[in-house]
Length: 478
Image (cartoon, rainbow, N blue to C red; front, side, top):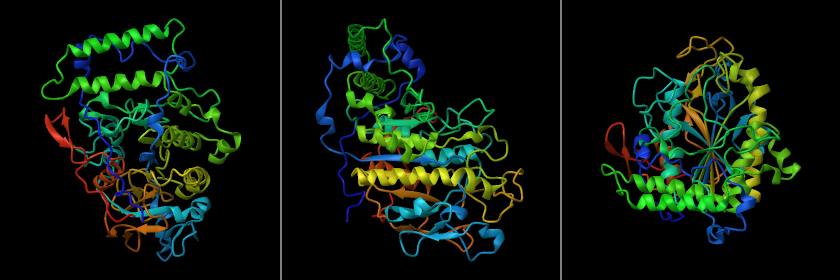
């Protein structure tokens, strides 16, 4: 049987970090000296690299359900537990005998033969920002959990590690994040752990911000200004090449020029690549295809993720967003009050329809074997309804944060469908069998992408070499 460990690792490009101060040393130039490009004006000048599409390589779609979905109410139900544990929802049968999930996930239940319920994820961080950092980076949080917001000391995210170390395919950036960096309303910085952090912000993934369901949705920075002819773009690239040739290849032992050059090459490469430009154009999809994913921001973001994977992006991160941004107690999946109403009416139906559509669509297109889908939040919810462990605003109708046991959904990428991996105890509170840490999950994703988790990068905060992941890839998923 095919396994995510059967495919050979591709060649990997070595790159480094480049701080803002070092970037100024290059002359204060932006990557292009311009904001965007116009594909129509460049098609005649540049040809599509057909060789880059000849062989399908591994990709990952990383779906983050910000706030912490309730594992015990959705995909690790405990129907035999007391009512204050099991809650209001009933389990339903799935396509796989012996595996049940929540009654409000019927389309997911129909795709269960393609899914793996990894029910044994665990860590020890009950605060949103640091917990998000642990799941995005695969590293235990570096300091006390006193803020949700990003800091320069943050561990680099998987998306940033992929941006820097993944094999370059065609013209697209290796890692894309959409439709936003997650952030709480009222806070002035994004949630921790989503970018390059201590590896350097130059390694941030390519952010596609906005609402893909909006008919006016447009990726910023992809149209060449009217006064910017193609010849001028080429002249600027040549000037940058000459400048790069005069600089030392590293600063303090860190390969900085290569990192800068890789980003420039990616940006310029996108100028003439038909597939790179077309990947962002959701209007190319049929009305039936768009309706299949659902008309909201989440569904259309998943559809865009599928298009980006088809075009050769290694890692696409889709961060959940919804209209609850201004909610003070229970925004997103953070169900401190009205847990069951929020799941039933707002969260589960939208997720169910869009996620099932993605899995089904990838399978129909022959992309599921090479595309690993990962669905997670930063933690689960308390086994007992109304139990307060971290947030004093938790009400009798809600569930508080719970990192000690929760579920990650996996599909594709050689992972065997129709299985529940690992097990929690009778009330879903602690892991009984085959525990998995964020580090192990990160190592598994990196391995699937052909990135050596044992290689090093330079940690600008601690001034030492760090491994990409301290975990161990999960070997028995296939």
